[in-house]
Amino acid sequence: MRQAKVLVGSLLVTLVVLIGGFLASQWWFVTKPIHQTFDQQSGLHPAKINVMPTEVRLHLHIDSTYDFIQRYPRLLDKLEQTAGHRKLTVVLDNPRHPELEQAWSDLQFALLEAVATKRYTLIPDAVKQVAQQHRLTYEVRIDERFVYVELQQSNRAWRQVVPLQTDRAEVLPS
Image 1 (cartoon, rainbow, N blue to C red):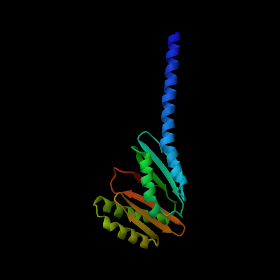
Image 2: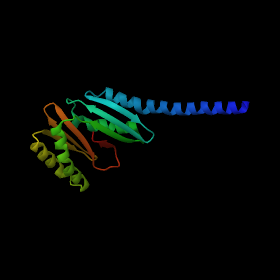
Image 3: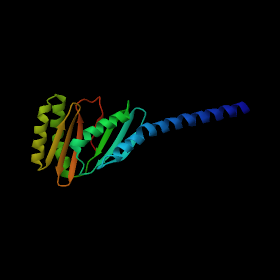
Image 4: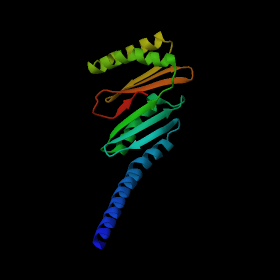
């Protein structure tokens, strides 16, 4: 009877140490550096950070003053380094505004078709056309991994990142 109590106690202590060590290492090596990265960025606020063994999932709120097209690609690189071997998924919290939502909806097919057919030169014209139809200002940037789109109307902005290949970090619509 006494041996059983010692065995159960040892198992419980081992489980607590293992799980506690795992959670502490996730916080120390992933969650804390992500928070430090956001502390250095004005205009970005993590709404939610979820670190799992195989994935890091972030929900981001972006202020209208944030220079998305210029600053976000560097931020994404830094977040990927922090995530390490984990898949990085970023959900951008875009404002609920009917005109911006409709413009994004109108743009999605042309954008995804251009990415699927690897005809990236069509993307800026597609964004321009949709922005003009909806009387929006816009910015678009394409690098070797992503298409960054920002549609703006007065003090509201709809921002989206579309991967050119799906095996990299993933940014989901809000």
